[in-house]
Image (cartoon, rainbow, N blue to C red; front, side, top):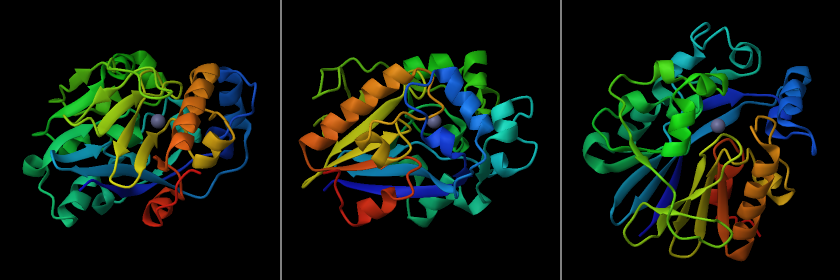
Length: 279
Ligand SMILES: [Zn+2]
């Protein structure tokens, strides 16, 4: 039996212009629009995903850490962290506590912790997994682990000192509209696909369940409707590339019954519970 569970690790408040950018706007223009936007959205979930598969449990992303809710902890030199985002994670909302509550012993029970990308709200819970196999897309790791990463809302200076992830390249066969893939399980029912744009090297996860497919889009989009309407987010490093990614996600989700699960979509958990597919 294959099962996908949403685990919410607190919330994040961002602006409307971050979730949806203006079509045709450049990467820089979109960021200026975020700073000018007076509209703060209601708090959005910060989500990690647990995949149960006969080969074991896979945790996709680790959410954020309560420390990032502490005023002054996020780097104040960075205008985005200073003005454009508000993280709200209580200590007992962190991923380690939540897995405990589900009766999961991370050290023994998790086959791997897989990061879709190294943004603070996906890598923030890594300190809970010092004994686990941690997998990160090589392209994203190389980008995140340096000054460019710091500018792009990654926090390499906060990563656990022991962190030495297993880096992988998404170089397996094409799947539908995706140019390549990387299998997580030997039966290839759980695999990663490249969904760049939001940040270089970003990946999404596809899970072929028994009666439908799950598409863990992560941050390739902030909400399902933006895939449907092909609307690129405001934070993208490359709007044209993000648009191609959205079009691939749309084509895939339209080709078979698929539940689409972005990391910050307020309706994602409900869609999963009600088994509501993209079409
Ligand atoms: Zn992100």
